[in-house]
Amino acid sequence: MDTRLLFQDAANLATPMLAVFAVDVAIGKDADPLVALLSTSDAVGKAAAPVLATGEFKAVLGEQLLLHSPNGLKAERLLVVGLGKAKTLSVDEVRKGAGVAVRSAKPRGVREMAIAFPEDHALDDEHLENLPCTLLCRSIVEGAEVGELDWDTYRSDRKDRSVQTLTIVARESEETTKKEIQTGFEEGRIVAGAQNFARALVNEPGNVLTPTELGRRAKAMCDEAGLKCEVHSTEKMLELGMGAFHAVAKGSAEPPALVVMTYEPKLEKGQAPAKDAPVLGLVGKGITFDTGGISIKPADGMDKMKYDMAGAAAMIGAMRAIAQLKPAVKVIGIVCSAENMPSGRAFKPGDVLTAMSGKTIEVLNTDAEGRLVLADGLHYAKTLGCTHLINAATLTGACVVALGMINAGLFSNDEASFERFLAAMKISGEKFWRLPCTDDYKDQIKSQIADIMNTGGTRWGGAISAAMFLKEFVGDTPWIHLDIAGCAWNEEVKPWLAKGPSGIAVRSIIEWVRGYSA
Ligand code: BES
Ligand code: ZN
Ligand code: ZN
Image: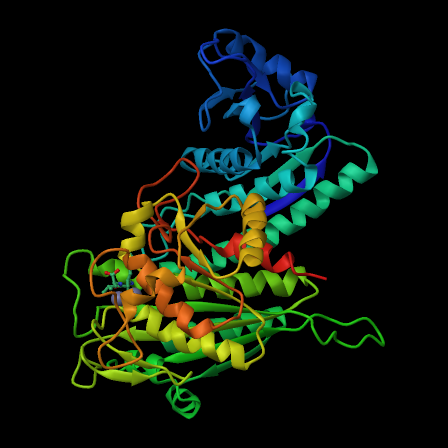
């Protein structure tokens, strides 16, 4: 979709469809809805007034009202999209509303449309803090571009219903406001582009996206974005002593890939890099297919395990945005990619592995492979000089049992890093819920014959056992672990999002990184 930004009165824009947002400004729980359009254009207000007066449209989040040939407007259709209660309005509703607008245009065959930038004179001052212009514009672009995609790449009956051009139309206003809107627009395109890039990788089936292919795509992205990128395989892993990662990889005929992407901020002329400047390490689980290995998974739903590389995709997507946003902080992205297969060469329950850090691991279950590849990825990141670590992984079914599919799991050994991530979540609108990984849980991964084992002895607190395992490899380095198993795949189509890969964590990671920009 080609997204553009235009400053003019929405009423004068000739377009097949103009979308405007509306909120319910009624106060009090039992009050009848009182709908207000988020547009200061008199003509738009007049066009919608008769139908709004009927009271049938209540401005519930995602609710839609379509008018053909609206009176006094150049647009062929006027689509009013509800954002819910004015009192609780935030950019999250705006992001969803933009997705709803675009997804409602697609089945109607509308290829070109416009969204009116929400003007908040219908709202009072208390909302301005929740809705700064930059973030508002960015959210519209994100919601629209992420909402627009449907996963029909592999369908030969593919009906091309895409919206090709979207114009965000904002009122001519003061220069400063215009600048803010423009900045939000550009950021939105970068962030949405990164999220959709990650989603497209996750959508690929395991036979297409092998570890080698994932490495190729990461490299191609880096070449285009101007990032340094190295893609290694078995030889380098053995040279580095990555005994945990290699054990997972060796059961497959497909060679593994260890991808290292580096972003270096540009220094001002004559400026030396600060000695104590942070170096951020982004580590992703890239299992392109997880059969479970010798501890094989049941057949039911095993096809889903093609998305076991969503953590890696999130990091590749985030690196793409970082290359474009150019924060003043060094970032290293590491992807540990392999296929987890049963075979005559596969690792087995009972095996004892030596990780790159030197720690020995007793394998109790070959299906707990994600933590093994990440153990070596996280340790490697430290040897490359990373001072702060974040990893994303579709790591445990237990995390899905604990949190369902609304919140992803978050674990951290460092309050300051966690606080920064909370701040990033406020901007990204993504939902993560913190779970504990204090040393009280250490016994859960105590092994009889090795330093640690790769699963908890029992089913209880499985997401925490996995986090405790990773924690063994980060040491004192501030670290955040995102368990995205329940949120990486959207199981039910939503009015603002297609069924399939969600691109979870991309937006929050980008924002977390920007938080360190000096
Ligand atoms: N890739 C799975 C986790 C997963 C589950 C991802 C559901 C997406 C949706 C992971 O490798 C795995 O199999 N974990 C096991 C660990 C267990 C053997 C300790 C699990 O969660 O059952
Ligand atoms: Zn597994
Ligand atoms: Zn897995």
